[in-house]
Image (cartoon, rainbow, N blue to C red; front, side, top):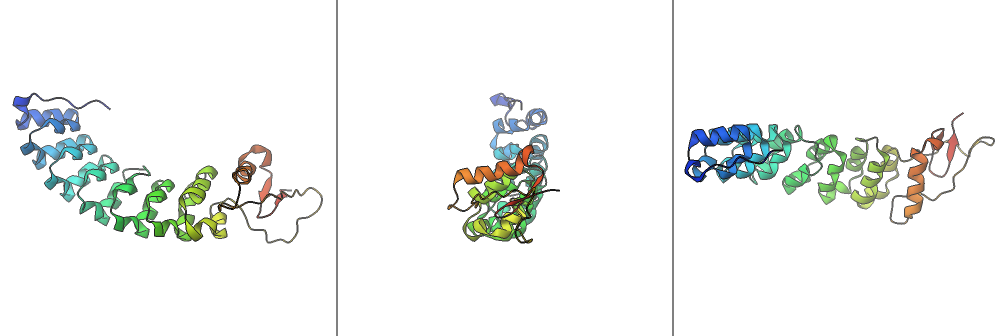
Length: 240
């Protein structure tokens, strides 16, 4: 990313000069006069070139839904610089998610929307680690946690969500573990004899489980050596 183009003081209130600079690098808006930072046409040009240029717009234009959408179209994280009103506007926030997969985007929206199940699901679809910035209520909601885990095939990310982000009942919910793909519940009675192998490792993502047990389980589900085994709560079954 290139640095913003400096504008000589005598030209900072000159519309043509500032717009030409912003067409090359939108963040040149930083050097414009207060009048041009409040000029819709100039700010749109800057935001069309680089969404984060919204940072240098006037407070009035940071509260202009159309200007903010232009900025978010060129980088959803631009929502950080929108007004409090627009960071609490569901349509504007959902539009921003379409143009960013950063997990931090959810941290910039209002507290009300961090507690909105639809908004949090949309954020998790873009990046499941977004759950970290959801409300405490949704981080302890088993359904929300399961949904976040289902958005990635990376078992370490699943583990991170359940162990370090989820809270309360969701952290210990067996269905969350199953939905996350971390384990399958055994429904077939005792394992058969012969080629079956039993791992009697106590495994849980609650605080009662040791880090070593958690790590061992993750290794069992990712290393090629174990690819021929199905893992269950309590033991594994060799695929015949």
